[in-house]
Length: 120
Image (cartoon, rainbow, N blue to C red; front, side):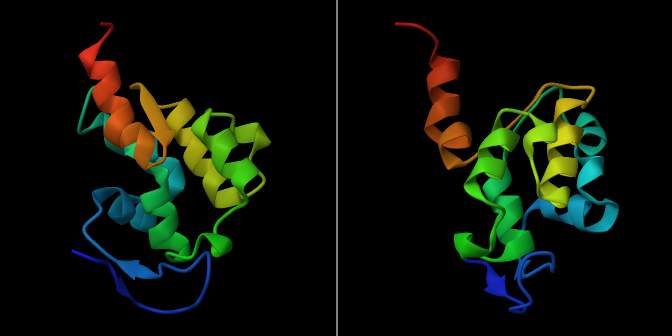
C-alpha cells in the first residue's frame, strides 16, 4: 500500500499517513523514545530510518536531513548529526537497552538476509 500525502508542510510536520508502528511512537512520544519503545517489543531491532524520515519530511529526499546526517545516524554517531530530530533518534538508538541498527532499505532488506545466512 502506498502512503497517502497529508500535507506539504515540509520536514518537521507529519506529512504521510501509513502503517509504521515506528512512526506512531516517534510522533506521539518523540524520537528520543525509540530505544525504550523497541525494548518493549523485541530483543534487538533493525530500523529503516528512511521510512521514519519519509513520514516526517515527505517522500522527496530533498526535504530530508542532509546525507551526511543520515549516514552519521546509520553509524550511531549522534554528535555528528546536525538535524535535531534525527540526532535525538540516533542517540535513542545508540543508548537503547537492546541492540538497534539504523539504516536504509539495504540494511533491513538484503543486508539482513546476508547476515542471517552467515559465511559460506
